[in-house]
View 1 (tube, each protein chain N blue to C red):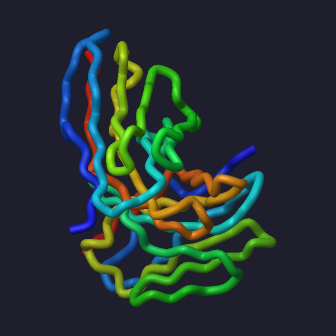
View 2 (cartoon, chains in turn green, orange):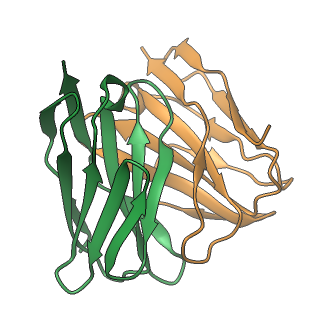
Length: 110
Length: 114
């Protein structure tokens, strides 16, 4: 079966660091995406991991452990505009189908 | 500007009245797909297309049709809409289907069926 788990909601303070976890059990794995989605808007690409380890991109970093079926998105120096849903998505199988988690709604407070 | 454009953005319709949501991309992408997004269920794929004249069912295709007559366009057709098709719909495209191909989403279409 296909299963992707993320916390439903998280709250953090402006300027702080927050880690959003994602665990997955899928029938094939080619890579893992993180997308950001502001309320009522389209998801936008944040990061892609295919190998184990940490990928850093400015204030955002994403980590992958394929053996553990685990990833996290790390957001540093939080800003109010980071309040959004963060979607974990696993691509797998012969067609590289993308399976999305239900997303984590992050609220950044002053 | 590279983008995926879908129309209409907002629509309220009645049960049984056929409607089409258009989707167009200007990035010469081969792969296009439709998703619906519902609270607590996340993004679920309805249909996808790997190239012109090639379409296939996603996870929730019931009640929907698609066509891919041209590379840039991928309309979603609801032949007889029902209230359970009330949702936020996203069209998406990517350059190819190999690993790591980033999917680009349209702005979304809010559909209400009464």
